[in-house]
Length: 268
Image 1 (spheres, rainbow, N blue to C red):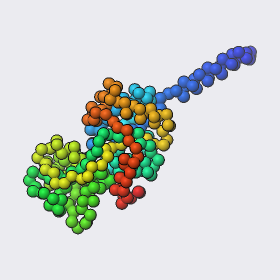
Image 2: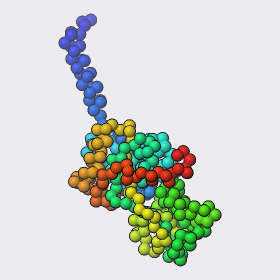
Image 3: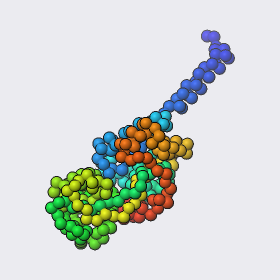
Image 4: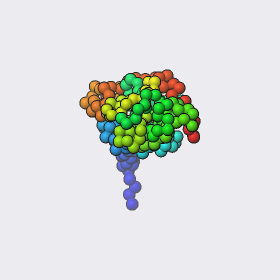
């Protein structure tokens, strides 16, 4: 049998290198997790346009991760399974302080939570809700943690009805299945029959952070994409779905101290 010539062997080597190079250029898949303030179905509708935009800008694949409730979310979060995360202020600060995540951007402005009562309940003060049924997302959701601060005495608290998300909590209060609810203040305007009992101090809006497993160039690519989304048609569609005009720059100091709410949780 005739042995391949040196030239033929070199050509085969070049082809092999080209094949390896092409394989290395394949798009990597990154995960983007969103906190379960909304149901998985609603989260899919709200954040899929953001996934589409990030794919276009980065040239990489992105997979949206939703969870059914905050307990599942907390357990998954502790395993550091997410590349990118859109998270409430307490989780964002925890990631930055305890898990080596890097803050990329934040939702605009600030947010608060409101304890609301349905139209059949006369409540002017939080003490008027003691012993009543209050719907809220379960720990470690921000609303539930703040509610625990409003009622530090375990013998003088509302009777909590746990819900999958804040929308379900509000709807239980509207329907009368609960006497009230603890929900993000922006939700209150959707339900005119609910009256506000108390509103918490404002805290930073949710932040978007990246795991230290994500390369510096990729983190910068995503940061630029987020901060410039309002200048791109696909980015504008993503912002509309999230009901914001643009995303903001942010520093870790903005969220400093928010993780204190999680200290009582198992696994902190």
